[in-house]
Length: 198
Image (tube, rainbow, N blue to C red; front, side, top):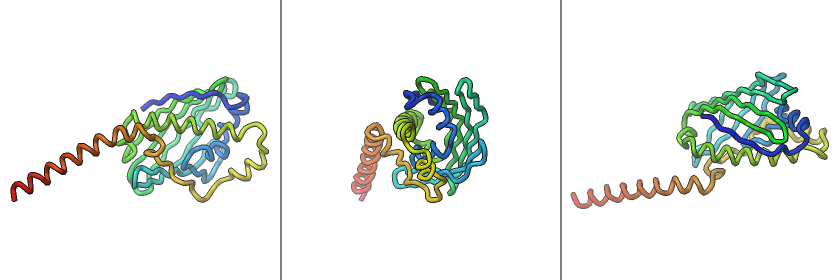
């Protein structure tokens, strides 16, 4: 599934560009993400995801496969697998930095999160991009680079999981409540029929 997002560049284009190419600066702005190692253009990490009562832990790798400093355009590939075998996720992300940051993601998800559907995933990803942009802005400019490096260095303990239902908010409830009501109605009909049979 292809997703496109855009947000106003939270700082000078060159500074934003350099920040986006630095996994140690980007990871703290990704809810549920923990960076575990960096080796040149390749990095490893994990993402905790909460979907209702179910928690998933994806472990995987990412790599910048194209970096064009003139156009300030980069292509990143990432892939991960749930540690309990409940699904996989992979993405090719293209971003271009100018007065705004344009992000195009080709996402493939299997397992429980895929059950959310394209519309819901698009809503969630849109909110996450907005949160990411706000967080990124807070790391730019007057912040002491040494302090940022110290706070954001490779974290061993994963962050709190990203709650997909909570992130989506009201739109999810609008979809879930009718389904829950329908399921309840079916359950009541079954109970009533059984009582009549007895």
